[in-house]
Length: 295
Image 1 (cartoon, rainbow, N blue to C red):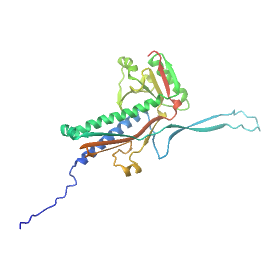
Image 2 (cartoon, rainbow, N blue to C red):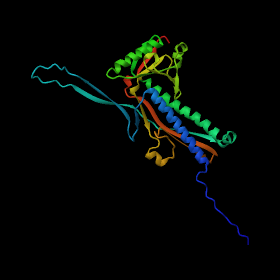
Image 3 (cartoon, rainbow, N blue to C red):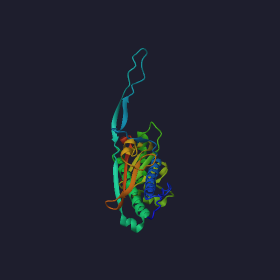
Image 4 (cartoon, helix red, strand yellow):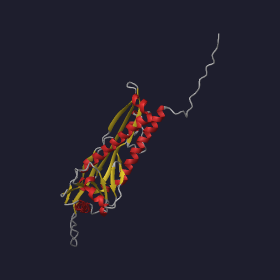
């Protein structure tokens, strides 16, 4: 009877597997999102990132009161200056989830890297656009107002309102405008624009602050606020609770989580992403909406 010598070979730990490739792409996706939003925060002048805790809602407090006269006769009772603090809910960081599937046919035709990366890139841009639009829509609820017959006049009046609203502090101002409103001006001015998070921005525009060009802003409108008034509120998608249930890849900030894996029932590669990021103004009355009446 012939004997067969069977040998079992251990797989080298450095062998690259398909799961490793998916992990690398997940890390790249998460880091590109986080790097882009970090650039956006730098552009906005945002330094405060507030992590949402379970059961919490982002609130702003406002102190109101009256300072009584300090002229008091000798021996008289000094009148009380009364102040009170009120709290107002600003916004909520809501966990949003997205899923896409890349079929085996697409992978076979284009290759795994191209097929998955192409759709990942489009998904990333769409998620960034969604975050951006939510923020611009929020700015539209600002309670300050100003008008001007031209672009320069409108932004100047917005700037003036902001100086009054934040007169107790030295602030840097940031404005959001539709690119069509500044197209004529940019055509004749020596100005360099930069891009971050799908938006172009101009530093020190007309000497009054940073201008961010976003098509989400209605034509003829200028949204202005102090950069210190903006806060990033987020759900950490890789916190202890989330990590126990899901294997999401994220960068150190935990702003976005992603996982790519096989879906055998459809013979496809499935990508799931989750993020709970919100950009809000701490003082809604510190957001001034300017109208270009000649637009």
